[in-house]
Structure formats: C-alpha cells, structure tokens
Image (cartoon, rainbow, N blue to C red; front, side):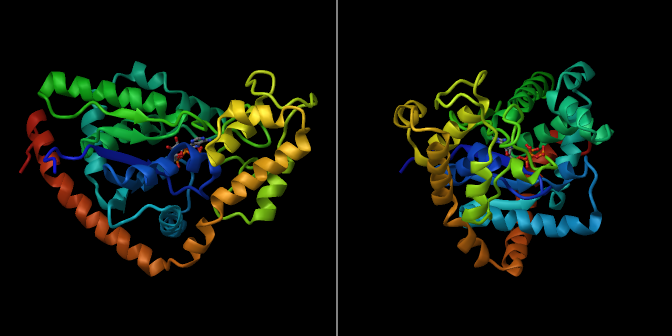
Amino acid sequence: MSDTPRQRIFSGVQPTGNIHLGNYLGAFRNWVKLQDSFDTIYCIVDLHAMTADYVPSELESARIETAKVLLALGVDPSCSLLYTQSQVMDHAELAWILGTMTPMGVLNRMTQFKDKTGAGITANLGLYAYPVLMAADILLYRANLVPVGEDQRQHIEMTRDLAERFNNRFGETFPVPEGYIPETSARVMSLTDPTSKMSKSDPNVKSRILMLDDPDVIRKRIRSAVTDSDPEVRHDVEEKPGISNLLEIMSACTGRSVDDLVEEHADGGYGAFKDAVADAVVEELAPIKPRYQAISNGDVRAILREGGERARELVAPYTREVKKAVGLKGY
Ligand code: AQP
C-alpha cells in the first residue's frame, strides 16, 4: 500500500433552490464518482446564498433539502465530508485575508457578477466579492481539484491566481488547485432558451429538469424543449443550440458519444429523438427519488452536525498557519 496522501477535492453548492440536471451532469455526478479515489469535501455554501435575496427562516430547510438530494445522488458521508459553510466561519476569515490581495480590476472582469446583476439581482459587496469567498472555500482546505461546471471556470482561474499571489508574498502555503470539468455536459443549457445555461433562478420552471421530477414531467419538459424548424438531428451549437443541448444531455446520460447518437437519430425526426432523450434522462434519474424518500431530516441534520465538527477540526491548524504567515495572531 502507498503512503502518498490522497489528493483533496473540494466543491460547493448553494442552498438556493432545487437541484437540476445541469448541476447534476456538470458537477454532482463527478462529486459521487470521485469520492472513492480522493479525499472529498463537499459544502453547502449558505454564506454565498446570502448574496442574493433570501428569506432567513427558509435557509435551514433549504440547507436540509440540498443535503438530502446530494445524499440521494450518492454522496456518501462515510467517505466524504459533508457540512454547511456557516458552521465553519474560517471561510469568511480567509476570504477577508484574500480580499485584501484581490485587485478590483480582476473582480471587475468576473462574468457571473455581470450576468447576475444584469438579470436584476441587486449588486451588493457580497455578490461582487463572491469569487473571493469561493477562492477561500477551496484554499481553506488546501484542495487540489475542484469538480464544477463550465460556468465556474473563471472563478477557478482567479483562485489559482490568488493561491500563487499568496504563496509568493507569504511563503509556500496553498497548492494551486485545478478545475475538474466534464467533457460533455459541462454547461447544460435551458430547455426554453438553449442559448442560456440551465439555472435554478430562471423564473420559467419549464427551462429545467429537477432531480426529483416524475418521469411524466421529465418527458413533458423534453418534448416541449425549444429546438428549430430544420428536421435534421445534428450537433451544431451555433445553428442548432436546442438539438445540440439535447444531444449532449443524452450523451452524458447514456455514455454514448454525440457522433454515435447523431448517426442513429439524424433522419428519424425530432419527435422520436426527443422521446429517446427523455428515456435516457428518466433512466439516469430513476434511482434518486426512492433514495431521497428513505432519508429523514433528522438523519441529514446529524450528518451535517458531525460534518461541521470534523471540518472545524480539520481547518483549525490551517487557519492558524495562514494567520501567522500574514502577521495576524494565529493562537
Ligand atoms: N447549467 C449548468 N450546467 C452544468 N453545470 C452547472 N452548474 C450550475 N449550472 C450548471 C454547476 O452546479 C454546481 C452548483 O451550482 P451552484 O448551486 O453553486 O449555483 P449556480 O452555479 O449559481 O447554479 P445555478 O443553477 O445556475 O443557480 P443560479 O440560478 O442561482 O445561478 C456548480 O459546480 C456549477 O458549476
């Protein structure tokens, strides 16, 4: 047996609504896959969720619900650390330290901030500094790999940059982490507007498929997915974004290549193709609901409570070391 420590993985999810197919294919499927071979830490990032409008009394049920779905997807608390961000306020402490090293020009280039404020979310300091808190989440645990969807690529780049800045200025402290982004379905698009990403905050519920949707709802959503008037099934993101999105979803759910699927469905018409996509999604999501129904809220609370305790113990020496390095009291 090798004594080399396992590489560490960190990733997070906001408790801001129902988990959808984009979250699952872009990130959470990898969370589950990677937990056998890595030291995996998964966090429900409720401090991030406060950057948009929210109702305080609903935050606890949102945390529980998000954790329950993650457990149903296969996140296993016996091998992964699962907890909520506000249990470990070291996240916010490190974010402050990293914030003092983050140039405004870098934050001004972040596209998520522009997208969210463009969509009507009030621009507050927390939302502007969101990528700094995300960098702190990852660096706090000295993670090596971060499984996320394509939309987080820019934030990972910024995290790498901050790790290097910190190491150059205060001495070698953080590994420079890498994003772990899937090749297919890294950016699952909306079913009603295939030029925008599938998103929890889209007011149109028909734009997404949720983890706990019944098969008939999934079929209805896919049948009504926006496509185009040319009947050929072909992968062409510019000309046929809707069909390309469905091809990628089907490829991710079946493990078959997009080329293979195009060959099979090219001339069969959109109706038959959409039915085949729906079958693949229904099959992929089938085990989730029964597992979800078997988990009690009490079990989830106990898992998060224990996860938070373990996370606090894990980061305490790291935080001391960082504070000492930057000249703060680390004792
Ligand atoms: N459409 C997507 N395709 C692939 N991956 C996606 N992710 C999100 N949307 C897609 C990935 O899911 C993980 C968790 O995301 P999050 O909960 O932190 O929030 P988000 O990225 O803000 O997700 P949403 O659904 O898009 O929420 P809103 O509407 O609030 O912006 C991340 O790894 C993300 O990359």
